[in-house]
Image 1 (tube, helix red, strand yellow):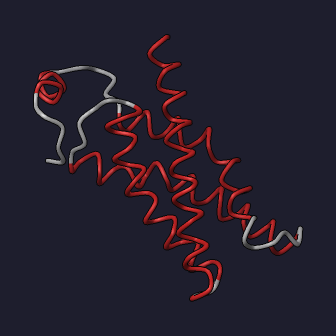
Image 2 (cartoon, rainbow, N blue to C red):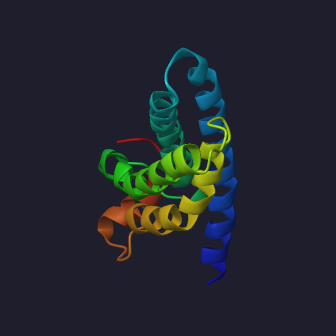
Length: 140
């Protein structure tokens, strides 16, 4: 229970860093392309950073190519929730398209935590997990 609370706190820290990275990328890209294209590219760039921060810091597990390949699944729900929220906020609520992505991102946080934990943390530690813990952390 205590470890899970630590994970939630670390997930929040990583989420803050990831949100800042995403929002910074979005603001840099927004003048050069339509808001939704800028949003999508910023989302993809920040997702890569999120993977490494979550494996190393949040869950303290070794990143692997398999986890890297599965990690985008954690963001499919996030992307859909944020995209729907972004569209609704900009189109129907008239929210400034520079602020709307930040508001939409907050709504998706609980979904992303549950899904990322399921993918990045093994439920049944087996021989592979023990080996992963003993080896230096690297994407392999």
